[in-house]
Structures are given as C-alpha cells and as structure tokens.
Image (cartoon, rainbow, N blue to C red; front, side, top):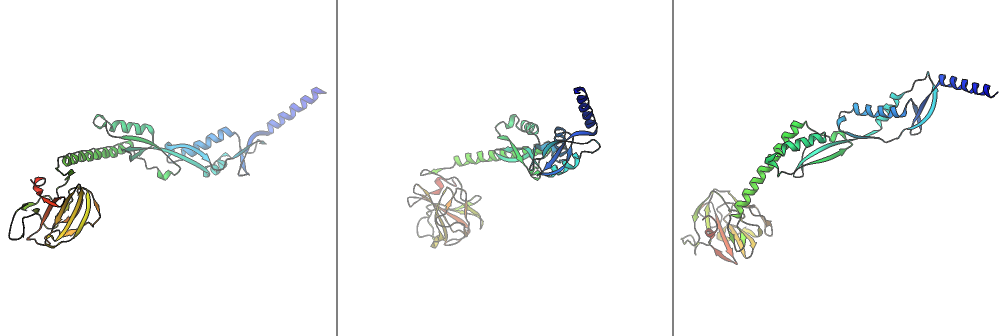
Length: 318
C-alpha cells in the first residue's frame, strides 16, 4: 500500500513538473504586473538595461527604485510566457540613477570636470609638471541625480582649459608679486606707506614753497600738470574727511590716513567720493581739473602732518 502511495505521489509530481514551472509573481505598489523566471537574473538584466541605454553610463554610480517590487514564488503553466521586458520598462521609469564625475579645481576654484577618476588624475599629473609644482590642483568627487548637471569634457579639452587657468594664475601671482615689490619700495611718511602716485604721466608745473603773483603765500603743495580728466588715485588707505568746493583750491578732496597724516587733492574736475567713505590705496577718487584758482588742468597735491604742509617731493615725484 505504501509503495502504491509513493508511486502515486511521484507520478503526480512528474505531471506537475511537466505542466508547471516555478516563477516569481511581481507586484508593484500592491498591484500584480506579471511573472519573471529568475529574480536574480531579472534584477541584473534590469540594471544592465538601465546602464546600457543611459547616455552617461560611464558616470553611473548606483541605481535605486522609488517603489521596491515585491516577489512571490509561484508556479505557472509552462506554456505561459513571463513578461520580464514589460515589467522592466515599468521599473525603469521609477528608477533613480546617481551619477558620479570629477571636478578639477585650481586653488579651490572649479575649472573643469571629467568623467573618471583616472582621467582626473592623469590631467593633474600632466599639468602639474616640474614648473607648476606649487600650483594648488585638487580633484573633487561630485554626485548628482540630474544628468543635465554633468558637463564633462574630453580629457584633451579639459587639459587645455586647466593649463590655461594655471597659466592665468601664475601670471596673476607674478603681477601681484611685482606690485607688492613696487609698493614695498614706496616711501613711508610718519609710519604710513604712500603706496600709489596720485597721477601718472604729468609734469611738475609748480613746486612746494614757490612764490608767485598768483598766490598770497608760498606754495603749500606740488602742482602736476595733466590732461583734463586724468584719474586721481589716493596714495594710501584712509577715510575721506572732505569732498567739496573750497575757495582757491576749487574742488578739494581731503583724506586722513591716521598717525596725523593727510593728503589733499585740489582743483579736481570731478569728485567720486563722499565724506566718511573708507578708501583703499590706489582707488580713483577724482579727476584732474582746473577749478578754483588755476591757470590750467593740473593736480595740486598736499601732504600734511598734524595740520602742517610738508614738501611732497621729499617722497613723491622726486
């Protein structure tokens, strides 16, 4: 009897296996969408499909799904076909793709982006040769879910752009160095460095201490004849204490630099500053003119220490 039972069970099992096949029923958000034959093979194929149909497949870092599919082992008729492709298309629409790319920065300023770490490392190695060892070149790993944000260039294009930026920075650094050397060579008055000449290209037309019929007393400044409108730069950092018309001075700008030091700029045609304004050395504060007691376009420059005018030529235009 037991043998008959075993034989019957075996026969039923054989018939079942012949007629049915194991599959996975797939549901998305509780709704049944079809069957697949292998969960592992399906998920791998789905991932490969998303990668291979993506325009930036080399940048894909990870793939996730907003709605996770549910799988349930089932048996279906062997004649019934699974629908992996249909299910895959539904899941593809719901996939979140995270992309990775690499940013090359010069002194922490982003300049270029490339697709792979190997490209970024090769670029930095080639640009940062023996002559550019001191240049700060860095690689930053970047992530995004928006493929439109990825604006990478071919390695050769990126190298040209980064090299150009490095050259630009080296030139800027050299100019800054030369400018600092120029400033360091400028005179110091009462502890304050006169970092800039107020005007350039002019000719001295009247010196400090000169006496003439145009003045009621000895000349308290230095006159530099310049074309009308020539920019006037403030010599040092300071605070504007006056910017107004002042009798024979015409339009007069006074700047206090601390330590009792003031510089005055007279006869200007234009004044670009206001009282109380802080100004940095080299800022254009006015334009050469011929206002007030003047016979032609020029800058009247005065340097005063504790209210007393001193000879500007001891320090400037000597």
